[in-house]
Image (cartoon, rainbow, N blue to C red; front, side, top):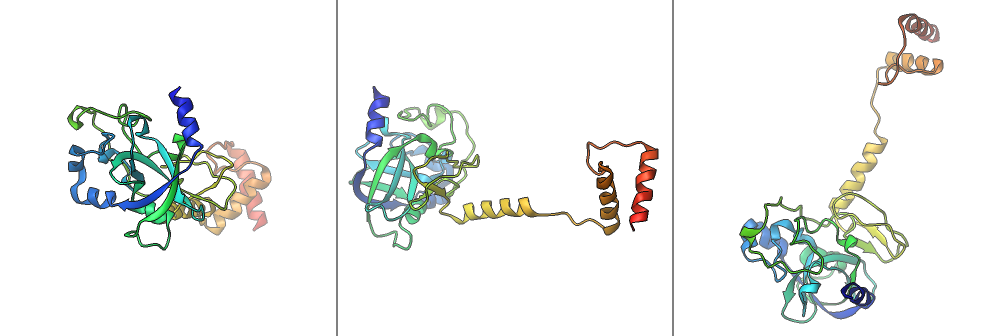
Amino acid sequence: MLFLLIQTIAAQWSTGLCTFHDYEGDYNRFGKALDNNPGWCGIRYSVLNVARITAMHGISASSCNQCLEFSAADGSGPSVYVLVVDQKGAEGLDVAQSSFAAAFPGKNSLDPETCRWRIVDPSKCGKICYADDPECNVGERNILAPAQLPPANQAPIGLNVGAVSSSSSSTTSSTSSNGASNSNSSGGSTSGSNLASNIQSNSTLNSTATTTTPASVQTVGQAFQIIGSNPFQSNAFIDLPYLYTILLLALLIN
């Protein structure tokens, strides 16, 4: 019944004011000391990608760890996916500053913006909460004290791949990196940060880079390829007479 209710809610947009909260700055200043004062959902900040979290007005335990898609109220800008971890006193959302800036590019983060949001599939918020049960359970509030929770590695912080969805694209890319998004037909998945651009650039460089080889080695390698076996590959095997024949052929080619 709860699952059906969440599905129904997920299809509906809510509208209100979006403000930013400097979760990233707080964590940079205080580090794991913030774990002693977690948000309403009881999740340690050290296990969260604090660039992709939000507080929401009027939440209950079932709202914790829900993935929200939010954007400008008129749908003109990109959508950003954030995780609900805290209660907001005023109406609307209180979003991490990096996510706020991605949803409202060129706007002053100090100015509230009218936004819309809805619950979406948890896969859109993959790799935001890095702890085990019970902290990262969708729809559950953790009531254990930080000292009672198992140790966990610090979560990486930033707008990783899949954090931002362009409203003008028709498909999303599927990736297994941090913040991965599943393929779907509702909106293109692109990164809203330099980090994602660097990831894509590095991937392109890795796929197109070649190793410079001395000319003599290249010539011999070509000879081996003509014969049909390249001994520079780890799975190639030839006997000595065959090797002499190939080397002679390489000399004749030169």
